[in-house]
Structure formats: C-alpha cells, structure tokens
Length: 139
Length: 397
Image (cartoon, rainbow over all chains, first blue to last red):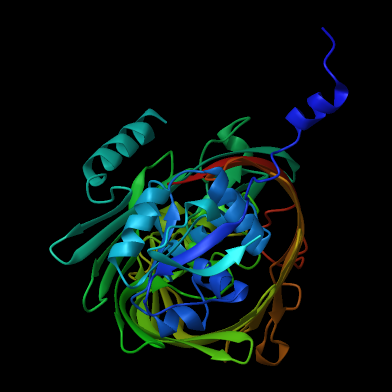
C-alpha cells in the first residue's frame, strides 16, 4: 500500500491547534490583576518592587524538572533550568531569599490560587479555568 | 574516607528530619529545608617541589579559610579537601514573617568536622527593611555568601587570590534595605559584629597545624551596595575591623620549616586595623557572563597592603559552560614603614573550567589551574608554581 507523502508530513507536524502559551495566573479579584513580563521575571527571580509591594505573595513553582517548568523559565528569562537553579542556589544558601514553593502539578497550583488571594502561579494556557485570573500570557 | 562516609551518614540521619526537603507548616510556622553537596578531587600535575607546614608540595590552596590544600604528598588523586555536605533549614513565623535560618557544613575527608556557617534571625521591619541578628558570612565578595555552595559557582573552587581570608563569618547584626531607583534594583546592607576563629585554617597553612592560631576580628563594621538591572550587576563593599592573632604553640619558621617555640602566648601581631574595599561588576548577557572583582586592603601602621583582582568569562552552550579566569594577589610593601619590597607574597592564577549539567540540580566540572608564584625573593614560605587538575560533582537538593 502506498501512503501519500502529504499524509506522512501531516502526521509529523504538530497539530495546528496545539496551544503552547503559558498563563501566569492569580486569584480572581485578588491583589494582582495584571503583570508585565519583567515583573513576572523579577518575582520568579526573587527580586524587584513587586515582591516588596506584596510581601505576603506566595509564588508557586513545580517540583522536578518538568517540560512546563523548562519552557516557562526559558520563555521568561532565556535561561535553562540548571542555570535558574544555580542562580537560586546563590540566593537561597545565603539566606537572602526563599525560592518559589514547589507544587506537585497544575491542579495543585490552580487549587491553591482559587483558595488564596495572595498566590501567583503558572500553568499551560489550556488549563486556565474561569475561576482564576490571567495576569500575563507568555508565548 | 570511611570515617567521612560514616560521619556523613550519621549527620544526614540525625539531621534529615530537621531539614526535610520542601516545606511543611506546623502551628503557624513554615519549615523549609534544603542542602548542597560536593564531591571534589584534585591531581597535582606539576609544580615546584617544597616542604611547607608539614606538607609535601607542589601545593595548591583552593580555600585558605578552611585550610583546603591540594598537595603532591597526598598521592596521585586527592579526594579532600573540597568534598562537603551542607544542610540548611529555615523556620518562618507566617504571621510576623520572622524567620530563623541555619546552615551546617560537614567538610574535610581526612578529619571530618561540622561547621556552623549561618544561624540568624531575620525580622522584616517594613517592606524594604530587614533586620538580621546572628551568624552570617562577611559579605566581602560577589560569591562570599555561598563560598561553600559549588553548584552556585561556574568553577570547582573560588579564586584563592581573592576569596578565603582568616575570617569569613561574623556574629552580629545587619540591616538590609531593598529599593527601586528607576529601572535599578538597589540592595544595601549595613553590618556590625565580631568573629573569633579558633585553630585558624588560614594560619595553619602558613604557620603549620601545630600553631593552633586563634584569630580575632573585633569591631567589624561594614556595608555593601548592589545595583542590578536586567543583565548587569555592580557591587561595592567596605569593611573595617581590628585584627589580632595568637599562636598557642608557636609557629613553623617559614624559612627553616622548623617549629619556633611559643612564648606564652605567642603573639603574631599587635592589634591592627584593616580597611577592606571591594568592588564587582557582573555582566550576564544571553549566553555570556563576565565577572570582574577588585580588592584593596589598607592596613594602617603595617608594612604591607593587599591588592587582588579577578576577571572571569563564562560561555554557556546548552548544558555546557566553558569558563576562563585570571586572578592575582599582590602584597604591596609599605616602604615608608620599613616594608621590604622583596618580602611580599604575590601569585597569579589562570584557570579553565568545563562544566556539564547532569540534571537541573547537579553538575560535573573539570578545571585546570596554573598558578605562578610571583613573591619577592625574601618572601617565605615559597610555595612556588603549581598546576592543578580538579574535578567536582555538585548537587543541590
């Protein structure tokens, strides 16, 4: 049986509807409604004015070396996960700052954001539900 | 080695519950724990033969403060001295945000021992100002705060020409201020305190382990300011203190390498003052990092002052980092006070490092150091030139 070439090419290509955007999500009606890319980068790097404006803000990240985490830091800072962890090693082991809290998965992040007004996290865009707010979208 | 592993195991078992990874919340307190580990080894490739302070050289000192010395007398491959295990725990009161941070490090394969590097309480006075009380690192250089955390460094060890003095911690009080000036993050720190180091590792290198030198830094007063914007960081620091040293058992005569007995107590120097000035510039742009550091120590009334500088370049390629660095230390004689221009210590080190990230939390590094002894003809002890090949496996958890 001969399989048309264009059919094989279609299988090899990612589906057109695949959404690779990452949403920075916060509590709906919470203290933060929108953020710039720099503000999010500063928050996740433990610095900047936004963290001082919201001292009780709980910043969420993920355990392990997930693809989402890798894509998030690459899109946000241009750095790989090992580079991010080396950066945080310098801050954390000097006692200057604590890294974002590590959650198990996106469901846990969304759950925490729904319950608490001072929480910031990130999820794959298609996972965003109506009961959280999107502060920024990373392409 | 077996003793080290046994001690490591006991240390880990007994402290693991206190430093459990990740976070837990108990009665309004959040407990978090983390750690770092390095298995390091070195091979002296070549250098000047000598016998100094009980060690057969060529010798390379990656960390003066901890008496870390690679020396040819230790055999073809030396597992000590960079191997270490560190554990850090923080307890935070959720409501007041008062936190207590502690860090212990198990080090030295040959004579395993645990050192307390951090133990301080922090209290946020307001959103910009934080008060710290307790034991901290002396913030002399860019990487001083994490001098034991090899995973935070692009190299197997810090440049000994700048880092590693007779005291690297202090007990005292500090106030940290963070603010924004336009696009700049500005972090300022003022601190005061004192430090006593019993059986100083730094002086054991120069005077022999037998000397059991006690170092005292009193009236430590200092400050540092860091400016950060996107890919650029600039840092300046000033520290002053009184310094004094007492060698209980005498010292190894640097010229003859024989024990010079103590007159009780053997005072190596009167109480003197030091004024330390440092600066650092760090460019972290896309795949390139350039770090430059300068040090000047003024010692009023002494016969010498200290200069040191460092320039390092790092290039990142996927999971690889390639670094090249040059650093030098120059003891500058104060001729007006009788200093001998030919009696000063000086050395220059060139290093190449290749780092490969095995995972997001671990790496493997290989580094070649070529150090030239440029000390004056009257300077003793003469460590001479040395080439060191070192390897390190680092992990944070």
